[in-house]
Image (cartoon, rainbow, N blue to C red; front, side, top):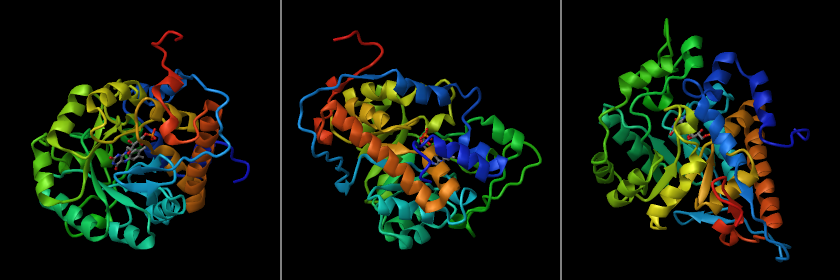
Length: 360
Ligand code: FNR
């Protein structure tokens, strides 16, 4: 692993380690995969306005999210089915999160049960949820998460239906039975044609979900609620008005609506209307410490990492996930030093220039 110098290098290792069906599942985006490329490229169009002659002999990357201290603003995004990447599944990822002192958002579609994840380590965990037509199943998971010491619920709102992921359609991607739902919902689909994951999603997900249902979620849990998957100022305002506790600006890693904007290009419009009332997080295309810095400069409190975590897991298990987080942290540290920002609070809007801005 000493040979690996950036997180992108894990992708090739993951490709070698995984059966094609699973690699394609992790890697793919929707349809033309335009947004998939844009999520990454849009970060590259943002340049720095570094400040010099600032004492950067000590760099402190620590921050807090919903009051929970973490070692840096780099968290683990919810991604489905980690056992397809590595036999230890979400347990390995959670142990790496604990070792790196960060927060893991465990997917509703995890392959280990949420109790197994909880008992394997003391990382701060949030549970991501989908709302099924069978609301009782979602409600039961929320209750289990509370009992297992999860600290927040992250409601994913960009999947009324599953996006068209053409590799999964071609590969006839199998949806395995998930232990969390054994005896409640059969998640297993081995399709003759098309994607099994899509077939399961369309049978299970409640496409009627709307803003009023946040009230329902509030009525069944006292945990903070974050909404993940919005991209506009209009929806950000709705989220604040509805009283949620945080927002994740996300296009689901470009797996849902192709030609959605790259997340980093819409972050500011969301931050602008939220006006600091609740935390705004961002995910999609974060592959470098410089990307983390750019997201913070444009107003995010933290970023979530999706695919690189799964690739690290597939290539090297828990150690691979740790290495992904550590590399990003090291890159963020040097970016802060070279930009003249010894602490997270020192990172400001003036430290970056977006492509629409003239040289100021
Ligand atoms: C995801 N994502 C996701 N989101 C969610 O809310 N619940 C889920 O179960 C999943 N599952 C999932 C599986 C895989 C393989 C991927 C790649 C993504 C979306 C995820 O949380 C996040 O929004 C993106 O992955 C962030 O983009 P990057 O970092 O992958 O570019």
